[in-house]
Length: 319
Image 1 (cartoon, rainbow, N blue to C red):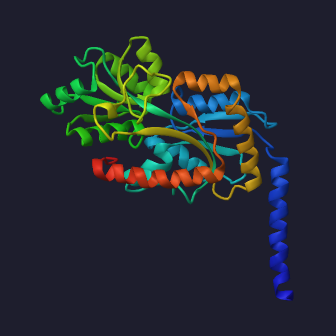
Image 2: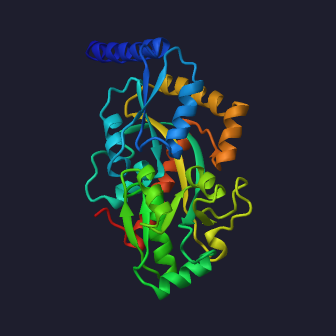
Image 3: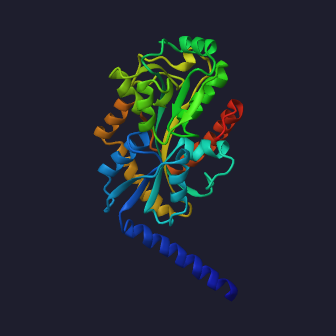
């Protein structure tokens, strides 16, 4: 029995330390990393939380773009597990990239602690106004008549915007050149100007521009039409079985105490359910689902399997 006393004492002290950390948390500003430049859906979600959070310390949004979100996510994975550094993860950083990149700087599961799923959204298939197509069927016909003539842009390799395009090519038997950018704010001017002609942009980013007439919306990528754009058909209405949903979730570094995770999750539940925040999300085409950490872990596991299959079947590569 005497041999086990030091071990029991260590376990007890560790538990007390985690509890004390949670009670005092946060002791300094919380850094919420967004793995893409400002202006996109993950940035919007992060800033909504930062504006409304009441955790006793400010939440500071830090945009760390690059490598399909891998650079920012890796910084969080390697940060101290004390809850003061979080990441607004995406379907790319936490389910697609592991299959797309031959070498990852982090493990999408082992290096993170799930905090909460925040929202999901369709991608919107949009084209430049000069392209002579107004429907998905017309786009497919144009692509088949003009193989590799068009280019589709994305805010980076491995993003849902990129993989949506690869899935579309695979399921329609068409070809387009992929042009990855360092963020959507660099891709959109080229789309408007005609340097690229097609994009499967996140709906919160693309829908306002389509409504302003700057680009043309052909379809949305979810199985059913979003309430935010009921007049825009789905790709699946022309290409049965097509579905590509983008999602956003907050993760902490692996080893972050459960009590700290629970505190952040509770505040996220409160903020994203505020009437003005929920209304903003709905207007942008974001469907809120503020999950528990356990629900996010199960959801992420299923998404990793799903997107690994899509990447394999599409032949997409991070090259």
